[in-house]
Image (cartoon, rainbow, N blue to C red; front, top):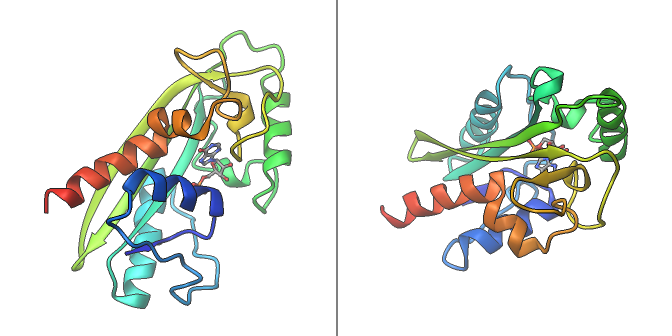
Length: 189
Ligand code: IMP
């Protein structure tokens, strides 16, 4: 199956979650080198748009994921705009700096990561959602992971995603939850 990503962190995470029985091909390996447009107003819409793009181009089973960080004190922002919160590019450090700035003085720091995985098999579309609740820290903590990981402390833990071992993150994360739903569905076919 083609996994519509070129993000090495995500690929490692998803390979670890899905296990050996699924052989995953990245976008680059599938010959897709251009950026796939992500202009939909919802996370689900973007995940579906990416999967449809790959399906139309390659005609091969594929799945795509899209994730947003929804911060309650910011009315759900950055949400579907999480990748381009501060700039047009995927500048993780600038996005985190903007988030910390926007959260200055906010007492309510509750937030969640939401992932939607869109799968296309034989032209049929399926979606799977995963959510993890947590809070935005007041400073960057930890070296692991990527994106907003060092600013997100999942409920029930006293460490950020960037401080927790990858297996722990995968076992509770938004993407882990959505991908395990995908894996369960695939195993039942
Ligand atoms: P994407 O839709 O998976 O590319 O995610 C959009 C943005 O959300 C990324 O650019 C990251 O900044 C952020 N993001 C997605 N997944 C994670 C994660 O597991 N940890 C931290 N940030 C993430």
